[in-house]
Length: 393
Image 1 (spheres, rainbow, N blue to C red):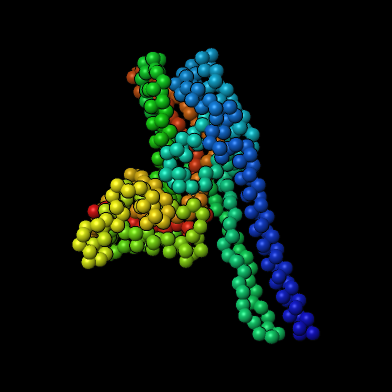
Image 2 (spheres, rainbow, N blue to C red):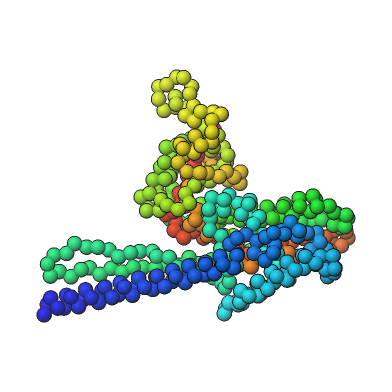
């Protein structure tokens, strides 16, 4: 009878573990189906408006602004079609049961391609989720697994269960404002229009990029990797120190011991870090006096990559004046599986123009504002490692 009770207890535990596993797998399947749906709709392909992929350059920023102000779209037929199609896409997303989804007056869905082109975190493989709906968007993740135990004859196995959690994405608004003279709008040429459009979109893209790396997470700002609790860190020294290849290997090791050494692995750092790496000499680590470089100058970039082990991207948005002990010239190095960085986007970019705002009327200006709702989260902190005391000289 005692053996029968043990077998029944073990059967109950296995059924409980099986039910937990099935719940996690069900949530995972739902997420995969959602991502597949977005992919099939072409949202992850960049510009999400049918026909705009082949004719993106036809879209005139200035024509759209003039039409918005005058409500006369007779000279902006293509731009009107883009906005109408974007509006349809936004409406088709549906509404959240608690807050709803409100379609902005004018939405331009061509922003995502520019974000990808300008953002180093996206270049390194961050996961961009577009067309999100509802608040918050919840993405399930497994946080714990079953545990195995050695047991003696007729002893009960200690119960364990799979555990699950979730990542919440909540929209936060980023925007930019530019003031243009009405003469410029009236007598504009394509080169000036491209300059202004690129400046607006690049400004937004760089703001998102900085937030992904160093966002404070306070008030209306997303939390960046540097401020996420639980990420891996490597300290060089009490007063900082030179970023060497050994430091990079230590960063790799932190992911390895956390079973996170996979996916889109790469570094992001300031150009000053690369300068110090390529200037390292053999004499720094041996008694050699020849002055030979570890990475020989004027050779292929592949030589540097072979020493680093993984690709890298550089951005001057990272600071070079952080303090550590007596050092005040420190900077940051990031190493990560960048696919674990999630950038969520709600709707398209909102474009509005006004000639009446503040001093715009008396200055004969048009003020143009763009807004985008986004959020940034990491799936697993263990997939990221940060050095914040690498001295630049």
